[in-house]
Length: 275
Image (cartoon, rainbow, N blue to C red; front, side, top):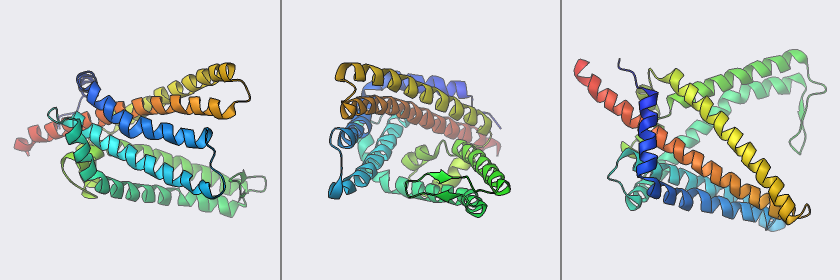
C-alpha cells in the first residue's frame, strides 16, 4: 500500500495557511477568538455569582459549539480551494449536528474507557471531596497501582484512537457522513498510525510550551502594569492571550487534518485500480 508522506501533508498545510490566511483567520476570529474573549470577560471582569452562575455552563457550551462550527468551516476551506468564507460557514452549519453527534459518541466512549480506573480507585478506599479533591491517604496500594495501570492503558488507547480519527472532520465535512465517519476514518488512516501519533505528541508539546511561556510572561507584565490587586484584569489579559494561542493552534491543526484527509483520499483513488 502506498504510504502517505507526513512531510508532504505538512508542506500542503503550509501552502494553505499562506494562500488562504485571510479566510482562515476571519473564521477563527469569528468562531474561536471572539467567543473566547467574551467568555474570559464574563469569568474575570464580570464574575458570575448567585443566579447568574448558570450562565457559565451555558456560555461554555456555546463556545464549544462555535469551536466545532469553526473547525468544520476551516476544514471546508482547507479541503477545497474553491470554497470561500461564506460557503465554508454554510457547509459548517449544515454539518454541525452530525459532527456534534459523533463527538457525543466519542465522549461517551472515553468515559467508558476510564470507568475501570474509577472503579479501582473506589475499591481502594480513596475518597473524593465536594471540592473535587482526591484523598488517597487510606487507599490500598494494590488497587491504586491497578488504577494507575488502567489510566495508562486508557491514555495509550486514546492516543492511538486520536491518530486514527485524524481525517474524521474532513469526512464529516466533505462526504456528508455521520457516525459512519468513524469507520471511514479508521480506513483512511490505516498505515499512518505511528506517524500521526508522533505528530500529535509533537503538536501537544509545542502548544503546551508556547501556552505556558506566553501566559507566564504576559501574566507578569500584566501584574506590573495593572498592579497585584487587579486579579480580574490580569486574569482577563492572560485568558485573551490563551485564547489567541489556542485559536492559532486549532487553525493549524484543522488545516493539517484536512490536508491529511485529502491525501488519504488521493491515495485511495490511486490504489483503487490495483484492488
